[in-house]
Image (cartoon, rainbow, N blue to C red; front, side, top):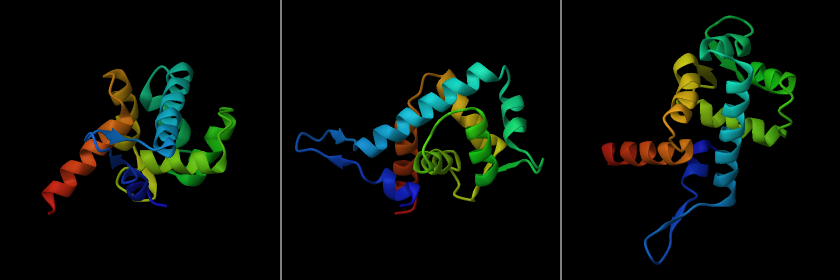
Amino acid sequence: MSSMQRDKAMVLTDEGKIKISSNQRNISNLVESFSIRLMQKFKKIGNAFRHFDRDFDNQISFKEFRIVCEEMDLRYSSDEIEKLFGYLDSDGGGSIGYLEFTKLLDEKRKGLDPFTNKQNEIKRLEETFK
């Protein structure tokens, strides 16, 4: 299931409120725990990015991401690593660039819920391309 399909899994209730599936809540929890661990381990986001970017190509591949998650003892399942990587790879290019990576901690610093923020971005894009 693509990140777009997962994001569209929310539904409106009869009262017009958004109901979020447990799968989506899980993504939010993953993002939260990942960002906390990064902030604990690294003083600067650039250092964290360089730590993940093992081949110094200014992109984090899925393989690099998985290896570093395991080294950081994050204890995520393969499915959870895929979900988190898919969330961070916001352009769907198959790798995480520096701006995509820093967006996570920027959202955390601003106190934004990354899941809700992504939903709002998807809605804005859908409206733009109607």
